[in-house]
Image (cartoon, rainbow, N blue to C red):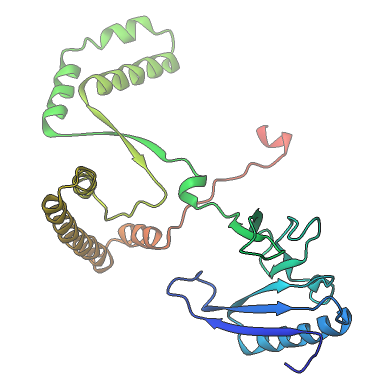
Length: 286
């Protein structure tokens, strides 16, 4: 660009993986010399950034470089500065701007070669949902025909008249009987505890977990032949599980079952019913 106080280079990048809301990102490298006219340089830079935003509205712009005494936030307030550590002596001369507030935290590193500016390591402050949220523990009862017969036999050998004789009212009788039924279920029906992580896929079954663990064990043991066999078996079973899950979803939409259709839509969109909020009204209890 034609400005003696400013050097700017634009790099348009289309990464293989980018956030869902951005189709690409544009890296802007800036150098403002110490003897430059700061206000003039920032004005030229702001005009170029605004023009670039109009041409690429779906791209995220990252502006970084040696700004010396300049501060781009004065001209473009929506761009936030992420470098908070000194980059030369006690001065912050190198800046990095994006429109994403609190996107990075800066850590100083040793200078490269004979440079008088230290390197800056920008660490993302975002924590993946898998790390920020704890796994969900679920306890599931495994109902089979054998366990149902055991539970039925337990109920048949129970003398229910004892509960009627020991209860003083209907509420106490109901609570006693339901507690006894729950006790019998816990005794006759085996339970299993599952850990559900946030990145678990609905088609990833227990068999696939076992095969994945077998692949990891083969890799740790250094057995290349066994590792290749476990990897090929896992990839084959993943394709089978995906096809089975897709067929199951298709059957839900083709069947005349509205409840099944809505359940499939909630699973696909990851919709969760919001918890009801109570009204802060004391007269509501009356």
